[in-house]
Image 1 (cartoon, rainbow, N blue to C red):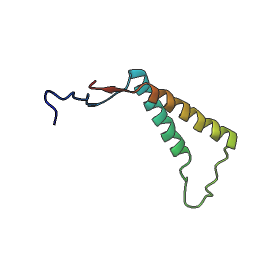
Image 2 (cartoon, rainbow, N blue to C red; image 1 turned 90 degrees about the vertical axis):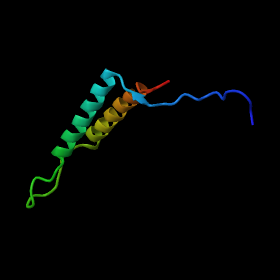
Image 3 (cartoon, rainbow, N blue to C red; image 1 turned 180 degrees about the vertical axis):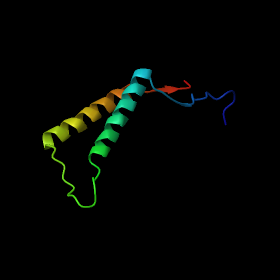
Image 4 (tube, rainbow, N blue to C red; image 1 turned 45 degrees about the vertical axis):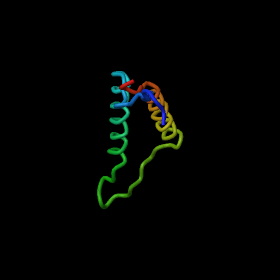
Length: 80
């Protein structure tokens, strides 16, 4: 057992996200929702076919990944 005060470690109450990162996150969310709506089946009778090149889809995913990387870099712990 030690005498004296024990050094307390800082607690993290949450995380801070800059306004620009919040806006980018909301925009990414909206773009994903739009893609979800565009790919929903249109009816029971028609075929579920979407004409989208692999390159275009890869660019969409890559753009989302880059944007989420930038958002994650802007996060900082609060309560320090």
